[in-house]
Image (cartoon, rainbow, N blue to C red):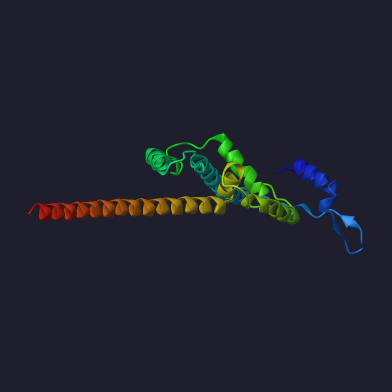
Length: 221
């Protein structure tokens, strides 16, 4: 930094009241330039900036990939069929498709720009993304308060993407999956009960036929 650049920066800082400090006499004065910058440390500054940029980019890309995965697993829809047989048939037909949809976003697939933008927006609203530029701490805290509502609501659409971007568990989707799992288990138990009942009824009919046959034979004799 030459003398002209240093003088220009010094004058620019003098015009910004947020950098002014109170002197012992109570008057405002600009701080010295060497207290604000670190001349002859370009290598260290570059290393710090590169490290911070990589850390920030890793968090943002990871959040964007979670958003992409959340878009791949929409919540299951309730069946409009009436009979239990039709429900079971429909679940068997869509079983493989649902497993494929609920998988994570493929590692070999690049994330799309809207994944990054969605992740960034929700992280900012949730108060977990200060960004590259420093901001006042009260603004960061206000952002975290605004982001409370993102954890609530349905498991699809914006809320599901917000939970993925913030790296939090989507409790609604977890409860929904547990409900479907419980319903599937109940249907399976009822199906087994019906099979046993039919088997028992069939066995009783055979015993009844044997008794009638024995009775007929006795009457003939």
